[in-house]
Image 1 (tube, rainbow, N blue to C red):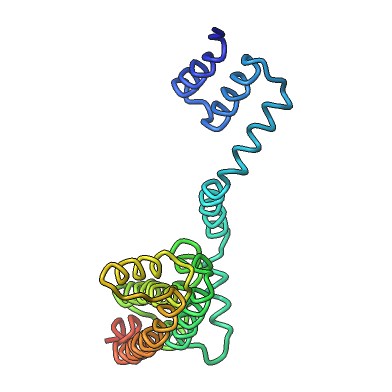
Image 2 (image 1 turned 180 degrees about the vertical axis):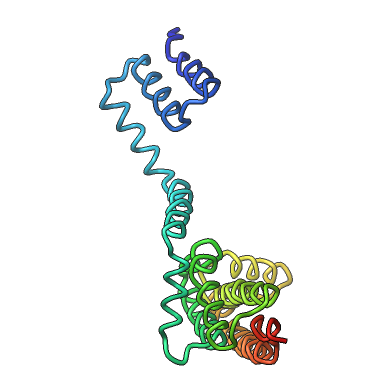
Length: 230
């Protein structure tokens, strides 16, 4: 039995103990293991590429987060605020109601990952909503700014939750179908999706009303500049 490929384990242990770059350590251990097992270098690279391609949905998830972090570091939120400040007639209420509709429609079409808290709300929607609120109502106290951000996050949640059930090829619809079937109700996923449309419309109207009411309440609160003058 050939024990030489087990040296790859030793490379991982030593590399982590010496605090080398984990990615380089793992790749180096994989290449060493393949070569010691009798594979040529091209075959080892092909095996690594096949493994990456077969599990790329995991890798892409972790690649997106640092990309968004870099964008924020280089002024993505500031650009988003500046953009909404230059839009004439833009208010926090109009912005979030528009995003609510966008989120519901895209989720209903199966594109539920097009929005979300890390990739859309934090870097774009929340800063734009905050800038629109400041533009309309003046400088806001910190607690009101936090409420604006919370409303932006809630809008994403409501839009996704009540929009995705309209898309019949989604896990939640299949779960509902399975539960109803166990009680003797035979419904197809398409029938369930159609009956989710009235609920989604009600959710849009109710949460949209909450957003507009919150925007009106902000107008009644004194801004920080007014508090300082008092």
